[in-house]
Structures are given as structure tokens and as C-alpha cells.
Figure 1 (tube, rainbow over the protein chains, first blue to last red):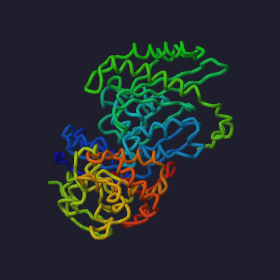
Figure 2: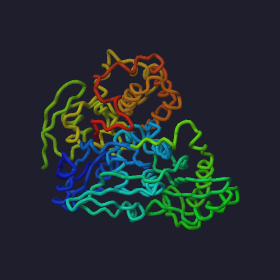
Figure 3: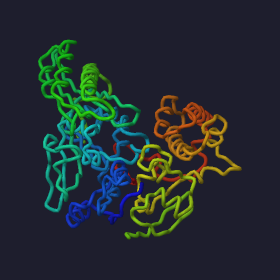
Figure 4: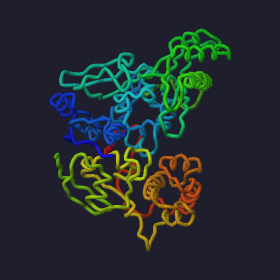
Length: 302
Length: 182
């Protein structure tokens, strides 16, 4: 189908973009990569009265290591994350290139943006899961100024965020390194949104789990952190019993939706399987100090 | 109507035209500029039939508005070869049964053109991954896989055919670069 009519504006700066948003009100939408928005417009599921095109604000296309964390410009492409190779950028964030390979396909990853994915807030989106896994912070600008929104306050519901209509994401910060974090997904076809996806990060010391983070996609209105499962893992020996208990706890704590791709119970089953898979994969991380790629004692400042 | 004057280069030829903002790049190419080699299948970014190259990168032209392509360089299947003079990739598709009905073929050719420029010596696994981007309902993909394999092995496909454009291979994961689109 063809999209409904709209008025097109091309922003030449972030200032211009947010002032257009302020002027046009909540009938306006930002367009960056357009890989979700244009599809929704073609279906007429979305009928914005105006589009503000920010795709040429190339200053916002970056992925930078800084103070032990990562700063991702809103216009960094999926492809840019997929192709991070610089050890100082990759250190502690090596799950990002792995996760990027699950996002759509070549052409989609060459157009879609990190910031766009976060703003779109699909509950199965890899970047929304990653933002939760790494305790992300969303930097939002408007004419009223800039604010930093903790990711725990950001995703409100299905395709719904705490961004105000006049706000634009300029950057997403991932402040916490999680070396060896792992992703496991099940999708009906390669490149589709996952039916269920899991991301896990495990920090272990002397055979004990000292910290754990477990995040799911596709199991509710938003990406979801499985806090009860994390509590089971932390302090455990990470043996098969602990992993199975954590996987069960994840599934019990969720009330996943049923749709054409699977029943609620099927999704719970996938949660158990994928949680265990991601946890085991995350446990197998080698000591970062000796893995040859990352030297944590000599972190590049950014 | 919200009309915008745009300039774009298609296969090396410069065009200036007025487009309505809601007109997708695919429709601008097909209806306004008559590059009807670009096919439209699903019009929501799933099938990949409408894949063209924008500033050297593959793009689903149904998911981009023509006005967004203002100032960009577009490559379509018409830039690859002609019926009498197929380019090596097109010849490989013919030789290895990479098509039957041909509807999806322009999209596959453009997708693979970008892919082989970026990765001239791919593994079979990488080829499988990239051709899973687009839908083909005739071949079962094995012929396409063989065609891409043959084109890559001949070494001809990566540097032949369409107008060469800047920006295709300069994209890096960590640097800020120009040429975002879509």
C-alpha cells in the first residue's frame, strides 16, 4: 500500500529538529532509518501529519568508548554496531555485534538506527534488550533542554516510551560493561523479530556467581528484566540446578502474549530454553584480562 | 499536496524532478523516471524485490521516500548490464538457474552487487545469510547460491556493472561518517 499524505521537513541540526517537533506537535514523527516507520505508514497503521527527517544529522552517527562505558549516537546504524572491531570500543560490549546479526537483514541494517530502535520500543528489539542489559540511559533533547532517562523508566508499554512528543533521542549511553554477555533467540525465519529472545550476562568469581543480568524480548508489552531469576543465580554455583531454577523462575514471572507465532505456554517454554542457553553461553566467557582482545587495565579513555 | 524539488543521480544520469513527499523512492524510480526494472513486491520491507543501492548501500526503496533520496546517487538493475550484454553477475544468475520467473531478480542482483563489493570473497555461509534478505518463490535459493558463488569466484562481479559510487565501502563501525540515508 501507499502511505497517507504528510508534510515533509528535513532537519539540518538537532536544534532545528526539536524546534520543528515543538512547533508541529504530536502529529509529527521523526524519521531516521525508517525501517519500521515507513512499513507502518505503508500499511497505514501510522498516519503522521508530518515527518521530520533527521537522517542527515550525521554528527549523531557514532559509537564511542568513554569512561568505561559506551556512548551510542542516535543515528548509529545497526550495521555500525555489527561491525565494531576496535578493542577499546568492543571491550565489555561484545554482545552488541552478535545481537546486531539478528536484526533484519543486510539492507535493513544499513539503514535502521540504534536510536530509532530504542524510540520505536518494539518488545522484541535487540537494542531495547541491550539497553536494559547494560543499564542504559537515554539522552533526550527538546526545546526545553536535555534530560537523561534511565532505561528502567523509559519503556512504558507496547511501542510506548516516556519520551514526550517534542523530544528527540540524541544518544544512548551504556554505562556498565558486561564482558561475554550472550544472546539467544528463536525466530520462525532468519531476520524476523524473535518469537522470544534472551540476553544474559554473568559475572563469576571463584566458581560463584557474583552478579547476573537476564533480559527477555517478545514476552510482553516491553522488553523485560527477569529479576527473580537473577536473584537465584547470584550467589549460586551456576550449576545445572541453579540454571534450571533461574530459567523456571523467568518463565513463571512472565505472562507472555499468545499470537499466531505461538501460545503463551509455548513462549514460556522458549523462555526456559533460551534463558538456559544464554546463561551457559555467558558463563563460558574467558577471563577478559587473558582473552587477547581486551586489556581492562589499559582502557582507552574514549 | 506536499511537493518537493529533488535532484538524484540514477545509474550515473542526473535527474531533477518534483515529487510528492509520500512517494516512495521505488515509485519515483518506476513511475516518474521509468526505471521499471525495480520491482515492488510487498511494499513493507519484507520481500526485498525493490532493493536498489543508495550511495552504494543496499536499500529497500519501498521503505524510503523519494524526497529522502535528494542529492543521493541511486543504482538500479538497469545500471548493471543490458539484455545483449549481461554483466558477470547477471550471467552467473542465467548460467546457474538463479531465477525462474524473474520477478525477484532485480532485487537479488542489487543486493548481491553491494554484498560482493564489500565482501569479494565470501564464504557459502555468508552468501546464504545475505540472500536470506530477499524472498524468491521459484528457485529454492540453491541456484542463487551457486550463481553468487560463481560470480564471486570469477572475481568479476565485485568491480563490474553499475556506476561506482563513493561511500560504499568507507562505512566504519566506530567513526562518524557521512552518507546516512533511508
